Length: 348
Ligand code: ASP
Image (cartoon, rainbow, N blue to C red):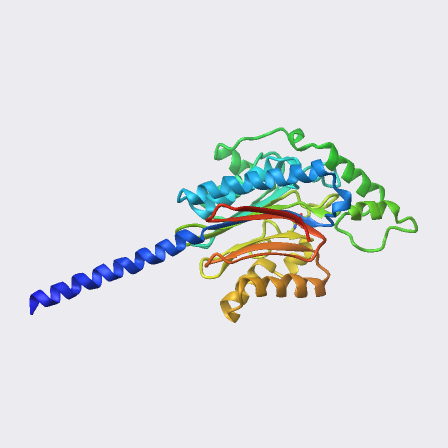
């Protein structure tokens, strides 16, 4: 009798082990990375083939970097940080090296990161001389008891944690400087979509043509079933008075929760903050059992459109389903799954 019981127990343990292994293998097949390099009025007619290729090259490099980490069993938090860092190091995107200028001719950057397993999060805002803001956001998450540090205080924290400082001139690019000059001539912040440009709309039109929210972001699901999200930005050209947008705000620009999904946003921050976009998508999955695609569509194509907000999101859910949803003309974006096939796109 005892023998039979022991045999039954061993069989049960064996079957449980097989089940666990199967689930683990399933997760192994589902690891996914999705990235964006900002949304906005991105039209093929305004792009040269060389410039288009340059964007695609960096998007690919970012995806390969994050995918390599995930493929080797690394964590989603490592993958999103590394993927974002690649785009921060490029002058093409409005984050890190390519950050836009404030009204006062400075570069003030914001970033945030969130771990869906622990719901830990870190963010920095209005920082001016840290080469990779996303790395500082991660340090805030891991090495401080806080979620967000801002300005001088964030840089003091960076100093104490051995961060690489760069001269603010590192962030100066001609392209962004010219954008600021144009925005100042027309006396509108790129934030301001109102009609206060007077009779002559030509400069305003030109600015609108370049209206790109080049923020960068990444979301990932790793082989262990953990989700993570990261976002980094220079904010909006010609921003004033210490303005901070949605990107460093957990729940607005960035959110990750292993029970639902990971989301990173890009677009007109004020609207994304009012609508708490990233968390709203997660909440729709949690409380309404929506699919990631339906939740993203409802928030970006309906709620944001009704509110007047322009931009988009990338998201991945706990099963590896993805959404790349935007209500603007284009969004620099891409994804890669376990099969290693990389897809990048720019226009609608
Ligand atoms: N969401 C960012 C902000 O409002 C801008 C962007 O996405 O490019 O600061």
